[in-house]
Length: 105
Image (spheres, rainbow, N blue to C red):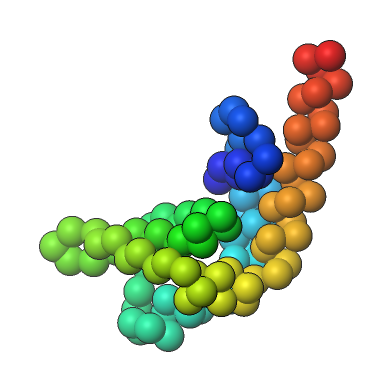
């Protein structure tokens, strides 16, 4: 899982393993929204740009995956369903970027 803060120029930070699992746990309200929209839906990937705002999700579908794009206030409303996810990602990114700065500096 990649986190790129709006103020960052560069590649951002990657969350893997247990940190990614925790992030996905915080994303449950977002995943539930897609499940309610279309029961049985499996979200393969999810991204959002808070500046847009824009949400992109790739959903598992037959015969091939499909992409859902949500723009503007509906995207902001969707992301607002998961404040714990936003806080977790912000904290993780801040911590890792601070650590990276110490190692580079």
